[in-house]
Structure formats: C-alpha cells, structure tokens
Amino acid sequence: MKGLAVQAEGVVIRCEERDAVVQVQRSSGCGRCHEPGGCGGAEAARCSEYRVGNPLGAQPGQRVLIEVPEGSALRAAGLGYGLPLAGVLGGAFVGMLLRGSDVGSALGGLAGLALGFGLARCLGLSQARRPRIAGVLP
Image (cartoon, rainbow, N blue to C red):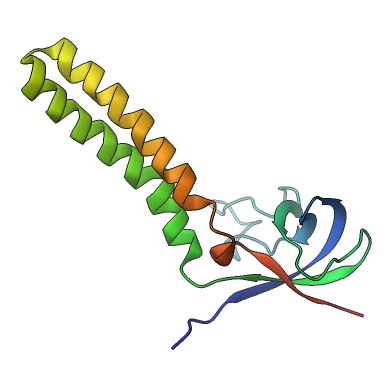
C-alpha cells in the first residue's frame, strides 16, 4: 500500500532546469503566537521558498499543488544526520583499532564523516522521494 502524501499550495517563482522554486505561504506556528510564551510565529515571515521537482513544466506565476511523499522528512533526517554520525563513530572505532591512539581515532572519525556525507549525498539524490509539483491550479 502506498503511503499518503502531504500537499500544499504555492506559486512558482522561477524555473531551474527540471525543478521549480515555489513560494508557499506558511500557516501560523503554535496557535498562541500573540500570547506571552507563544512561539511568535505570527511575526515571522509568512512565506517560504522551496525547490521542488517540476514534472508538469509549470511556469512562473502559476499556482501549483506540491506533493511531499510520506516519510520523506524522516528519511532526509536519517540521511543528513544518521549516516554522518554513524560514519564518525565507526571511523573513530576503526581508527582506534588500527592505530591504537587518539590520533588514529580522530583521523578515522574524519574519514568516516566524509564517507557518511558522501553516502548520504548519493542516496539523497533519488528523484522518487523528492517533493514535486503534482498539479497546476486554475
């Protein structure tokens, strides 16, 4: 069974190769924005820009429906934070085993960090899990 996607409306600002930069109006933060102790979200900028896939060829100025596949935020966090962290820890462990010193551990950790970032970059380029324009609105 395919997971549900989160959808939002926005306006295409510009097109870049096969992608589009879309401006999306954010909703307020906590619902208590103006109260003491609230998030202050009402005072923050109300629009954000996102680079999304543009398989429909939407043009600047068009209103569009953006679709974010379910689980993509969790996957992105895992790739962006989990793999580099695992690389640092694994590299430091291997460096300590090979060199038997703090210097070996530090060098192994740096090598593992670079490997983790590289692997995250390669795995994160999948077009199937990226936010994309799902429809052009009237």
